[in-house]
Length: 168
Image (cartoon, rainbow, N blue to C red; front, side):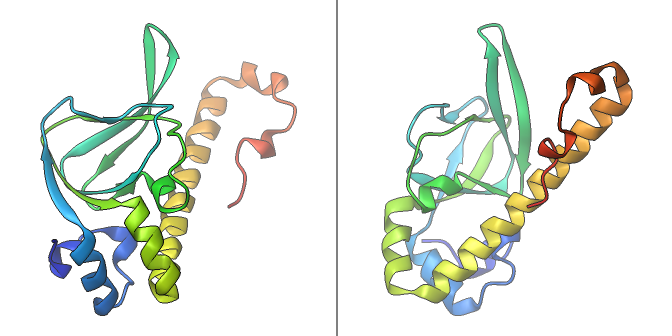
């Protein structure tokens, strides 16, 4: 069980009514993970939704056996693993704690069951996921544009630059 005031520290939950936060708090657990803990790997099914209270989690993808790329560093107040809330499909990235972390976890299966009986909860939670997704996509689009500005020689090889920076 997690207190509603702790859930208020999660950005995507900041607009959620207190009665819904209480419902989430009943289902949530606070877990502590040490540095270098792998929460899940790319290709594994994601069945847990994660909300970082303290610490930092790197979301990485492997380019080749010798090189990983950090897609994003998730810090306090941010979430990841949202596919657990809709289908529990395979992860497209690996999640590794970069330092000791306090993370609120939610069972994706249990949350899906709650969505079926509480439309308001589903609406607020998925609206928060959508806001966070848009913020992440905007940041990635800016990174792509900065990279292209620093490496103009790459531009001619890109046929449709708009597909790299879609508006979500």
